Image 1 (spheres, rainbow, N blue to C red):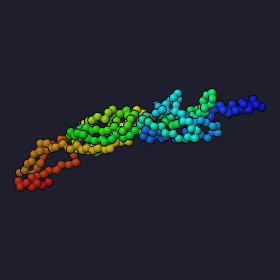
Image 2: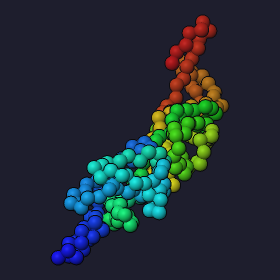
Image 3: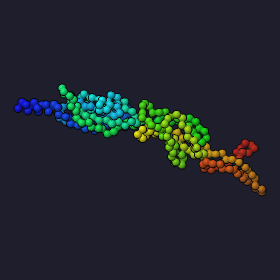
Image 4: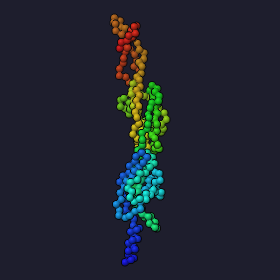
Length: 250
């Protein structure tokens, strides 16, 4: 009878605890807040977190972060990099005199703190059919692979160009008479995009008519204007006639 009782106590002390049940992994800025449940009647010493890649003191399963409190059901990892994808696992553990007994590792859903938008997008230079754009990087560390510059013209045509830096970026070959709207997004190494930056707008002036001529037709008091059209978009033409007194008529 005594031997059976000792065996029972040994098994109770060394039995593996049940697996933890992850319920939530919420990224916010550079933080990842984890939540879980644990209903096992087996008394545990605490919980152990693994994070790949590492966040602060929480690294892979060979260098996990111990939380020595069996009443805890939530924990916030601080120092994550926006745009990077993290795999976070959890297990329950029991300290015994001979060794640490633990449950299996259970993964939370993959966590990806979202990228922040580029800031302060502006046009720093205008040259007829080209503009130079500049913007500020999002604050803090981030996994930004490149920036996506999107241009939408007044006809609704959308064009995107990628660039790896935020140094002055020139967009040329714009069409006369068209209006353009520019925005920029950050793109992570996993291809995830941030919300867009602020918008900036630019309208390219129509080409000036060339070779303008005015004639008075024989036997008529009407003026006849002729000119070459040039290229680009236009919605119409406006003629202005100045008199010798300085008055003008449209």
